[in-house]
Length: 155
Length: 285
Ligand SMILES: Cc1cc2nc3c(=O)[nH]c(=O)nc-3n(C[C@H](O)[C@H](O)[C@H](O)COP(=O)(O)OP(=O)(O)OC[C@H]3O[C@@H](n4cnc5c(N)ncnc54)[C@H](O)[C@@H]3O)c2cc1C
Ligand code: FES
Ligand code: FES
Image 1: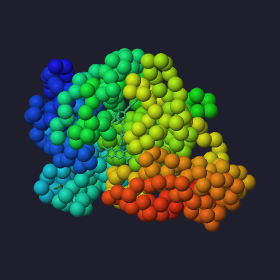
Image 2 (image 1 turned 180 degrees about the vertical axis):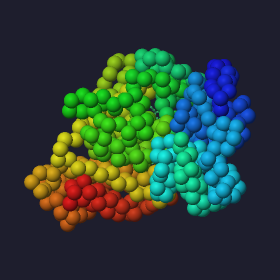
Image 3 (image 1 turned 90 degrees about the vertical axis):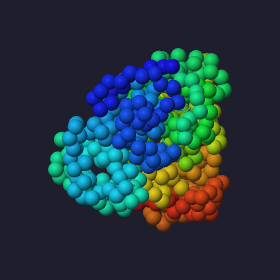
Image 4 (image 1 turned 135 degrees about the vertical axis):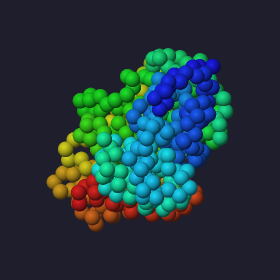
């Protein structure tokens, strides 16, 4: 089987992988990053969003083998051991109910703030268009991203 | 679902990709960004025996200025297209359409070449290529060939690429001064594919429309030109009224599908309304 080397949340892993193994399954089952869930079969929901070499990707729409050599950050590594300002803002604004979409929402929001540190409400909605939430109605998610941007989460 | 098993080859060079495809037979497939292919594998709607990954071929990435035209490397991602200064300056229609594709994370992986090779009639970029009269550049065992948009898109998810050909780039004309453009897409939810989309290009001269080019998304089994509306717009005054008369002919000669996103009649209506709006915007009327 082919071998890949990836860095996940600051730790290097080398593993043999079957070509058909999806990156999200690799992250959950080999690297133990169960903070990254799988929410759909169609690449629509965004729950599995992670950062690959600094930009957001849906990890269910990548093969693990395509990530060979990449640096990956999951929700578990975003705060570097503590809480990232987005995580704090989601808590403070009550931006989750069941929490299933939350890891992906936060990773997509982090990517938005990377390119646009002070988005308008409309830009927040556009930036999160690839992420579905079945519970909250989105209002508090938009508030949380605003709050994090005002707290300087992008820096 | 977990995809069915397949072999995987990471191409080191373009020639290596072509020979791997040729050796892999009918069931070998290229993978670029994977944003269309991997969902199909997960749903077990595709069963390739071999995936040839061209993702590492840096030569196929980026935008080249070739005088009258731009050549956009097949591996240029949607995100890169939306940020590229040459595209912004010379082919704003493409930028405008690429911004409407999917969502930011998908745009980070999905490529212009993959989108065009996939040839989904609901896809935005095949329509833009059709409206622009783009030329697709392909490399196979016999060398390179150039294929005009009219010959490239054959049917639903079907192009004239041979199984052992790799799409390497897309040549688009530079839009000179005088050209206006607009891509309009009607969808009902965020991130959704177009129920109908319209790519309109208008060249204005002396307050009138000298020339119009109109491509339609999801109005048939492949992207189509709205010939009747183009003819009606050419020579028309650049006014809302004259362009509405042209837009009213947008669905002539089309055969749109009926599916759970909309009936054929509804799509015809959307094509007429959106074409009028896109022409008005493109003409600055
Ligand atoms: C949630 C979601 C929403 C989307 N919404 C839209 C939308 O609104 N509008 C839209 O237009 N698209 C949409 N897409 C599709 C997106 O544009 C894809 O990026 C694109 O269709 C495929 O590009 P890719 O590089 O990912 O190709 P891949 O998935 O890698 O390949 C797609 C097909 O093209 C072939 N192929 C790829 N590259 C080449 C090449 N260089 N030479 C020959 N054959 C090749 C493959 O063999 C495969 O058959 C969406 C996708 C998702 C997941
Ligand atoms: S699990 Fe990846 S987008 Fe839904
Ligand atoms: S909080 Fe339940 S899906 Fe978003």
